Image 1 (cartoon, rainbow, N blue to C red):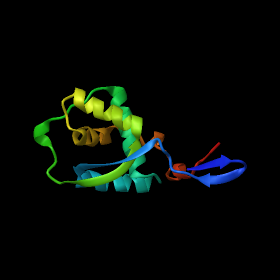
Image 2 (cartoon, rainbow, N blue to C red):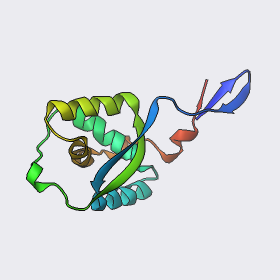
Image 3 (cartoon, helix red, strand yellow):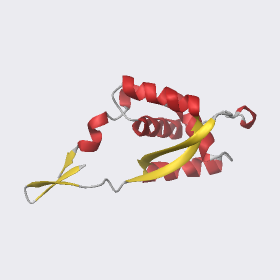
Image 4 (cartoon, one colour):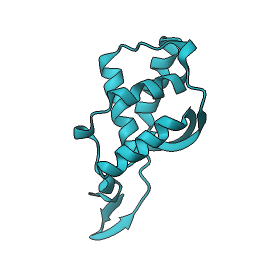
Length: 124
């Protein structure tokens, strides 16, 4: 993101975001890539939207026996507070974080997702 400091634009890192890695289904990653390209956004913004919508509904139906077998390592970024809330949610529901991430994909509302150029915003 960019910040205005003494009348000049300075590029800074958004410190409210953190990097993390997880293991999710390769098929779901491919689905997210296509969705991100179609709606001109990034996978991380899609996932954030799914996380927040999942947390708002508060309910999750997940059968541990039906976990995908094609999980791959996936690295992305997310808002620190939102990710911590999702971790707490997963712990409370006795699920792995990976399971909650995969379940949140069904809760993505593409009309509320940040646009791809959000990372280039200018803040005062």
